[in-house]
Image: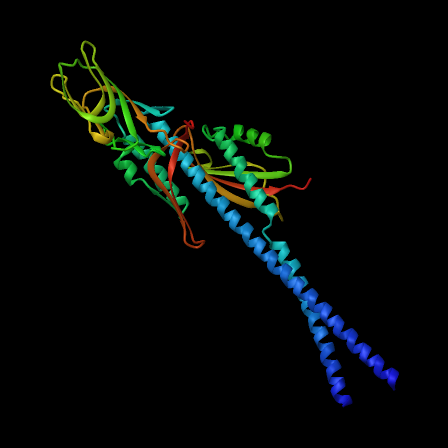
Length: 137
Length: 275
């Protein structure tokens, strides 16, 4: 009889130990996953990037494909806590068909990207890749 | 002995309650984890939708822009009538080339995109929605308006640069179309007006070239001219309940088999009044 009781207590302790072990494991997994999680803030960032390029397009800023004026438009338009880089590709001579306008891509930051198309005044097709990230204030 | 047994029982009770409490916490942690994963999946779906929306909107925007840059049409919608002005013969090759370039480059950059230009290249022109009235530039010398129950009237002005020698008018009443036609040339003119037209054929002789205008029941219109002509066609239609807009007859298809997403839509040209 005393042996049975000891076994019972041992089983209970083992169970408790296992439960605590899994709790720790779950917590670790939870926090590790959170590092790579796609969050509402990331989605918001992507939307902001898309909106900024749409505004530039609606303002006809891609029509003459002038990197200097685009750069100054971006500075006026992009909020201070956002970083934005535009990569514009097409069949034009400048930069062998690739122009980059905007901020420098930072290291160790979540960078989200999307693509849109535009047409210049010269009826040139442009592929615009926007990369957007949040800046620490 | 009794006290020892009581202490042992208390110990078991503590251990049991601790186990239960930990199990509860463990379950909660699992629920949080699954919930967080499911929310993340929603955001991933939303970001995919955002990327599709970027492609869809910007592609339609450049197609519409390309059309407006290259078209010879001048159009406006006022209340329940649409007015389209153009000059014939027309050259649609430039527009076809630009549309084909956009198709080739767009499909190269976005494998999920297909631009169906077949009906556009076959039947250039405009579709007035929601009445679904098709104004077709069949080739360089033709204007066609497809028969449609929503058509009520036509007000047509044709201005030829060559002199009219004669106008032969054949018409039949007992229809329900109101038609006003004014055909002018530097020296002569002819015209037609009736509000119960079933069909109408006007053969014009320009001394060599013989343009014609025909209107059949349900409003099907065909104007053919190899001679230079400025045309202005006002189409009266039944009022629609939805917002009016013009569409170009081409289809944008976005098909992502990985995400199980398929979208097929036309290209809206511009938003018009609600009348």
